[in-house]
Image 1: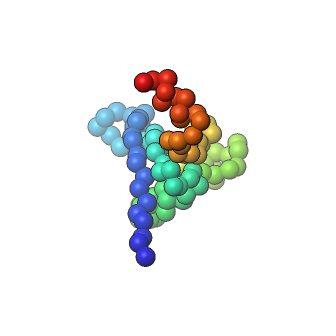
Image 2: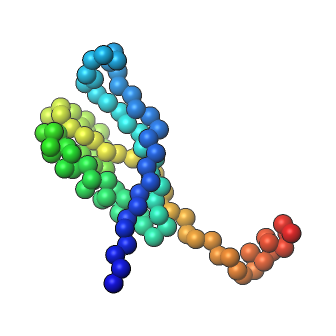
Image 3: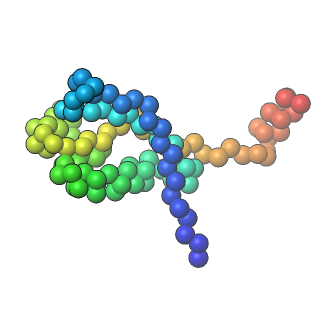
Length: 114
């Protein structure tokens, strides 16, 4: 029985914090882009990220809010000021299904580009 490894590709697009370069920031924002395998889905990726970040947050004494559903609640009030908050921007998209390489649509397309 083979055990498949989960692979999540991450791209860090933006890291920002509102303080001078030579001091420790009070708040840091990190934007990540996730590429999800065809065999996985959004909820599995969210679970993987939560499990990966939870031990780090615990090690540094930070609360963790991962993909919370409550609207209008400020994390600082709920989590006491020292926290890691993971959230999505917009609607997360499931991986697109694999395209067929045979059949009527593919035959028409491949015949058109020849």
